[in-house]
Amino acid sequence: VRNADGVVRILTNHHVVGPVSDEVYVQFASASVAQKVAVIGRDPVVDLALLEAPQPLPIRATPVPIADHASIGERVFAIGFPSGNWNVTTGFVTSLATPLEEFGVGTYFTHQAPISPGSSGGGLVRIRSGSPELLGINTLVAVTAAKIITNLGYSIKPDVIKRVMGRMESEKVVAHAYAGFVVADSKRMNPYQYADITKRPYPPSRDDIVVLQVVPASPSAGAGLLPGHGRSGSLSRRG
Image (tube, rainbow, N blue to C red; front, side, top):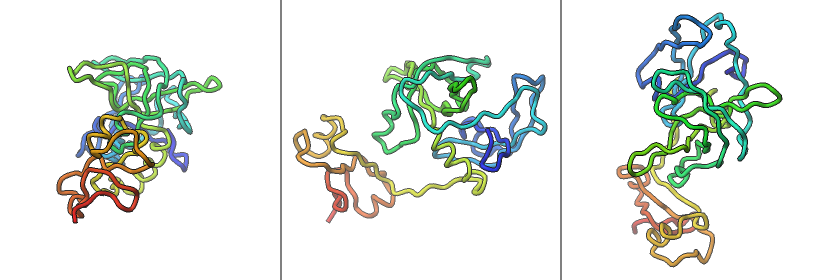
Protein backbone atom coordinates (compact mmCIF):
# COMPACT_ATOMS: atom_id res chain seq x y z
CA VAL A 1 0.00 0.00 0.00
CA ARG A 2 0.98 3.69 0.02
CA ASN A 3 0.87 6.04 3.00
CA ALA A 4 -0.59 9.55 2.88
CA ASP A 5 2.65 10.86 1.37
CA GLY A 6 2.75 8.19 -1.32
CA VAL A 7 5.53 6.15 0.31
CA VAL A 8 5.20 2.40 -0.33
CA ARG A 9 4.65 0.29 2.80
CA ILE A 10 3.65 -3.29 3.60
CA LEU A 11 0.74 -4.05 5.96
CA THR A 12 0.22 -7.27 7.90
CA ASN A 13 -1.07 -8.42 11.28
CA HIS A 14 0.85 -7.64 14.45
CA HIS A 15 0.53 -11.25 15.58
CA VAL A 16 2.22 -12.38 12.34
CA VAL A 17 5.25 -10.16 12.96
CA GLY A 18 5.44 -10.79 16.71
CA PRO A 19 5.78 -8.33 19.59
CA VAL A 20 9.58 -7.85 19.54
CA SER A 21 10.73 -8.27 15.93
CA ASP A 22 12.53 -5.24 14.46
CA GLU A 23 13.15 -6.93 11.11
CA VAL A 24 11.33 -9.65 9.20
CA TYR A 25 11.70 -11.41 5.87
CA VAL A 26 9.08 -10.88 3.19
CA GLN A 27 8.63 -13.10 0.15
CA PHE A 28 7.05 -11.71 -3.00
CA ALA A 29 5.42 -14.11 -5.44
CA SER A 30 7.31 -12.39 -8.25
CA ALA A 31 10.74 -12.64 -6.55
CA SER A 32 13.01 -15.67 -6.20
CA VAL A 33 14.34 -14.88 -2.71
CA ALA A 34 12.98 -13.35 0.49
CA GLN A 35 14.08 -9.87 1.47
CA LYS A 36 14.66 -8.44 4.95
CA VAL A 37 12.67 -5.31 5.84
CA ALA A 38 12.22 -3.24 8.99
CA VAL A 39 9.13 -3.23 11.19
CA ILE A 40 8.46 0.50 11.48
CA GLY A 41 5.19 0.50 13.42
CA ARG A 42 2.75 -1.73 15.26
CA ASP A 43 -0.67 -1.61 16.88
CA PRO A 44 -1.14 -4.64 19.15
CA VAL A 45 -4.78 -3.79 19.94
CA VAL A 46 -6.02 -3.43 16.36
CA ASP A 47 -3.53 -6.17 15.37
CA LEU A 48 -1.71 -4.33 12.59
CA ALA A 49 1.98 -3.99 11.77
CA LEU A 50 3.61 -1.65 9.24
CA LEU A 51 6.74 -2.72 7.36
CA GLU A 52 9.16 -1.03 5.05
CA ALA A 53 9.07 -2.07 1.41
CA PRO A 54 12.17 -3.16 -0.50
CA GLN A 55 13.61 -0.59 -2.86
CA PRO A 56 13.22 -1.16 -5.69
CA LEU A 57 10.08 -3.28 -5.50
CA PRO A 58 10.26 -6.68 -7.22
CA ILE A 59 8.93 -6.86 -10.75
CA ARG A 60 5.10 -6.89 -10.91
CA ALA A 61 4.78 -5.93 -7.23
CA THR A 62 2.38 -2.97 -7.39
CA PRO A 63 0.89 -1.15 -4.37
CA VAL A 64 -2.89 -1.39 -4.12
CA PRO A 65 -5.08 1.53 -3.01
CA ILE A 66 -7.04 1.18 0.22
CA ALA A 67 -10.82 1.17 -0.30
CA ASP A 68 -13.10 3.61 1.48
CA HIS A 69 -15.54 1.11 2.94
CA ALA A 70 -17.01 -2.35 2.51
CA SER A 71 -20.57 -3.03 1.32
CA ILE A 72 -22.69 -6.08 2.04
CA GLY A 73 -22.84 -8.39 -0.97
CA GLU A 74 -19.52 -7.31 -2.50
CA ARG A 75 -17.47 -10.09 -4.04
CA VAL A 76 -14.03 -10.32 -2.41
CA PHE A 77 -10.83 -12.32 -2.77
CA ALA A 78 -8.89 -13.44 0.30
CA ILE A 79 -5.14 -13.83 -0.18
CA GLY A 80 -3.10 -15.87 2.27
CA PHE A 81 -0.39 -18.44 2.88
CA PRO A 82 -2.03 -21.26 4.89
CA SER A 83 0.03 -24.45 5.31
CA GLY A 84 2.84 -22.88 3.31
CA ASN A 85 0.81 -22.53 0.11
CA TRP A 86 -0.03 -19.39 -1.88
CA ASN A 87 -3.78 -19.29 -1.65
CA VAL A 88 -6.65 -17.20 -3.04
CA THR A 89 -10.30 -17.84 -2.17
CA THR A 90 -13.42 -15.93 -3.10
CA GLY A 91 -16.67 -15.06 -1.37
CA PHE A 92 -18.88 -12.15 -0.35
CA VAL A 93 -19.08 -9.54 2.39
CA THR A 94 -21.89 -10.72 4.67
CA SER A 95 -21.97 -8.16 7.49
CA LEU A 96 -20.37 -4.84 8.38
CA ALA A 97 -20.06 -6.01 11.97
CA THR A 98 -19.03 -9.17 13.82
CA PRO A 99 -20.12 -10.92 17.03
CA LEU A 100 -17.15 -9.14 18.61
CA GLU A 101 -19.16 -5.92 18.42
CA GLU A 102 -20.92 -7.11 21.57
CA PHE A 103 -17.60 -6.73 23.36
CA GLY A 104 -17.02 -3.18 22.24
CA VAL A 105 -14.78 -3.95 19.26
CA GLY A 106 -15.78 -2.13 16.07
CA THR A 107 -12.66 -3.11 14.15
CA TYR A 108 -13.86 -5.91 11.87
CA PHE A 109 -16.40 -6.82 9.22
CA THR A 110 -17.49 -10.33 8.19
CA HIS A 111 -17.07 -12.15 4.89
CA GLN A 112 -17.37 -15.69 3.56
CA ALA A 113 -14.20 -15.96 1.47
CA PRO A 114 -12.70 -19.01 3.23
CA ILE A 115 -9.61 -18.31 5.33
CA SER A 116 -7.75 -20.56 7.75
CA PRO A 117 -4.73 -20.42 10.07
CA GLY A 118 -1.92 -19.03 7.96
CA SER A 119 -4.18 -16.56 6.17
CA SER A 120 -3.54 -13.91 8.83
CA GLY A 121 -2.11 -10.68 7.51
CA GLY A 122 -3.28 -11.38 3.98
CA GLY A 123 -5.27 -8.86 2.04
CA LEU A 124 -8.98 -9.04 1.38
CA VAL A 125 -9.29 -7.51 -2.08
CA ARG A 126 -12.18 -6.36 -4.24
CA ILE A 127 -12.06 -5.49 -7.93
CA ARG A 128 -13.35 -2.07 -9.01
CA SER A 129 -13.21 -1.01 -12.68
CA GLY A 130 -10.80 -3.86 -13.36
CA SER A 131 -8.33 -2.84 -10.64
CA PRO A 132 -7.80 -4.31 -7.15
CA GLU A 133 -8.50 -2.38 -3.95
CA LEU A 134 -7.55 -3.42 -0.43
CA LEU A 135 -10.80 -3.86 1.47
CA GLY A 136 -9.37 -5.38 4.65
CA ILE A 137 -6.67 -7.40 6.39
CA ASN A 138 -7.71 -10.98 7.21
CA THR A 139 -7.23 -11.38 10.95
CA LEU A 140 -9.67 -13.82 12.56
CA VAL A 141 -11.76 -16.82 11.61
CA ALA A 142 -14.91 -17.86 13.45
CA VAL A 143 -14.60 -21.11 15.42
CA THR A 144 -17.42 -23.15 16.97
CA ALA A 145 -17.52 -24.28 20.58
CA ALA A 146 -16.18 -27.63 19.33
CA LYS A 147 -13.19 -25.75 17.82
CA ILE A 148 -14.34 -26.34 14.25
CA ILE A 149 -13.30 -23.60 11.82
CA THR A 150 -16.31 -22.07 10.06
CA ASN A 151 -16.47 -20.24 6.73
CA LEU A 152 -16.87 -16.84 8.42
CA GLY A 153 -13.78 -14.64 8.29
CA TYR A 154 -13.20 -11.34 10.06
CA SER A 155 -11.16 -8.59 8.39
CA ILE A 156 -9.99 -5.22 9.67
CA LYS A 157 -12.09 -2.42 8.18
CA PRO A 158 -10.43 -0.14 5.59
CA ASP A 159 -11.22 3.06 7.51
CA VAL A 160 -9.55 1.55 10.59
CA ILE A 161 -6.49 0.64 8.48
CA LYS A 162 -6.21 4.20 7.18
CA ARG A 163 -6.60 5.71 10.63
CA VAL A 164 -4.05 3.44 12.29
CA MET A 165 -1.50 3.47 9.47
CA GLY A 166 -0.48 7.10 10.04
CA ARG A 167 -0.27 6.56 13.79
CA MET A 168 2.00 3.54 13.36
CA GLU A 169 4.41 5.69 11.34
CA SER A 170 4.44 8.55 13.84
CA GLU A 171 4.10 6.70 17.15
CA LYS A 172 5.89 3.42 16.28
CA VAL A 173 3.81 1.57 18.92
CA VAL A 174 0.22 2.80 18.97
CA ALA A 175 -1.41 3.23 22.38
CA HIS A 176 -5.17 3.47 22.88
CA ALA A 177 -7.20 4.98 25.69
CA TYR A 178 -8.46 2.26 28.03
CA ALA A 179 -11.35 2.46 30.46
CA GLY A 180 -11.97 -1.25 30.99
CA PHE A 181 -15.70 -1.56 30.47
CA VAL A 182 -17.96 -2.71 27.64
CA VAL A 183 -21.39 -1.28 26.86
CA ALA A 184 -24.18 -2.10 24.42
CA ASP A 185 -27.35 -0.52 23.07
CA SER A 186 -30.22 -2.12 24.95
CA LYS A 187 -32.42 -2.24 21.84
CA ARG A 188 -29.82 -4.26 19.91
CA MET A 189 -28.93 -6.80 22.61
CA ASN A 190 -29.80 -10.47 22.64
CA PRO A 191 -33.06 -10.68 24.67
CA TYR A 192 -31.74 -13.41 27.00
CA GLN A 193 -28.52 -11.50 27.61
CA TYR A 194 -30.46 -8.32 28.35
CA ALA A 195 -32.72 -10.00 30.89
CA ASP A 196 -29.81 -11.82 32.55
CA ILE A 197 -27.59 -8.76 32.98
CA THR A 198 -30.18 -6.11 33.80
CA LYS A 199 -32.60 -8.30 35.79
CA ARG A 200 -35.40 -6.53 33.91
CA PRO A 201 -37.96 -7.87 31.43
CA TYR A 202 -37.36 -7.64 27.71
CA PRO A 203 -38.05 -5.53 25.63
CA PRO A 204 -36.58 -2.44 27.29
CA SER A 205 -39.12 0.27 28.11
CA ARG A 206 -36.70 2.96 26.89
CA ASP A 207 -33.47 3.31 24.95
CA ASP A 208 -30.60 2.68 27.30
CA ILE A 209 -26.95 1.83 27.63
CA VAL A 210 -26.15 -1.48 29.31
CA VAL A 211 -22.81 -2.19 30.95
CA LEU A 212 -21.99 -5.71 29.78
CA GLN A 213 -18.64 -6.22 31.39
CA VAL A 214 -16.14 -4.51 33.68
CA VAL A 215 -12.55 -5.71 33.45
CA PRO A 216 -11.06 -6.53 36.88
CA ALA A 217 -8.40 -4.08 38.12
CA SER A 218 -9.26 -1.64 35.29
CA PRO A 219 -9.89 2.11 35.76
CA SER A 220 -13.62 1.44 35.53
CA ALA A 221 -13.45 -1.24 38.20
CA GLY A 222 -11.55 1.16 40.44
CA ALA A 223 -14.27 3.77 39.89
CA GLY A 224 -16.91 1.29 41.06
CA LEU A 225 -18.62 0.60 37.74
CA LEU A 226 -20.66 -2.62 37.73
CA PRO A 227 -22.33 -4.71 35.02
CA GLY A 228 -25.97 -3.70 34.90
CA HIS A 229 -28.35 -1.13 33.53
CA GLY A 230 -28.35 2.66 33.35
CA ARG A 231 -28.81 5.62 31.09
CA SER A 232 -25.85 7.57 29.76
CA GLY A 233 -24.39 9.49 32.67
CA SER A 234 -25.94 7.19 35.29
CA LEU A 235 -24.39 3.82 34.63
CA SER A 236 -24.66 1.28 37.44
CA ARG A 237 -21.96 1.70 40.06
CA ARG A 238 -21.32 1.08 43.73
CA GLY A 239 -22.45 3.64 46.29
